[in-house]
Image (cartoon, rainbow, N blue to C red; front, side, top):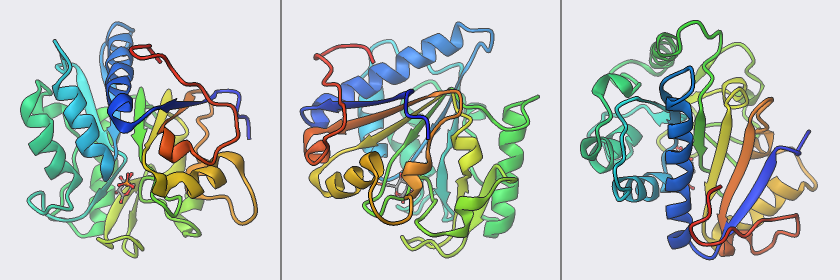
Length: 256
Ligand SMILES: O=C1O[C@H](COP(=O)(O)O)[C@@H](O)[C@H](O)[C@H]1O
């Protein structure tokens, strides 16, 4: 796997990582909005990212999201009012506080059975990325669980081998809730930039395996390798504690 486009950026703590993440998102948004595309497409993940991203973006001065298209890297098939709903959390913490147009948020329909929900979300993505055989996001923001899963792509799961669908249903997620929809690896690896955000010492052992290799099957997060885009890992010191690979420690306020 070609790792020449991979950068590992380490910040003293999540408190320093957060503003750097916001600078990354806003810089990529400005770049995309002033390109021929005239808009910024970003895919967001759930879990710990929701709070961090929402806090930092809502604190960003003069944030203009009017030309953003937001998709979900994965989503739990539960009602939006359920605390497990990633959309529900972002709606409360981010979408309701910034000027993202409602039409710019590509959300699942949680009233559908999981298979139809995935098909419906795939159709929304296809309509949201007209003329693209596979949606090419400007930026995907990913998390990683302590088992090495990313999106809702879990270790040893057959969905890791999906090559045709852009969105897949999963009804046996080892992490609750069991029913979810997820972008597939071909979509993740087609993005212009993929940024993982991983913080805390509990992630250190899995990060070592994902970023440095080792025995055992390749974990889902280690299969993320954008074919033409960049791959960034934003870590805090506790998460990076066991790593011996080359890392960057950006100066405070630096653009990444
Ligand atoms: O279940 C999920 O977990 C992953 C990782 O979450 P984290 O809380 O460990 O950061 C997340 O990226 C994914 O979107 C979510 O559905």
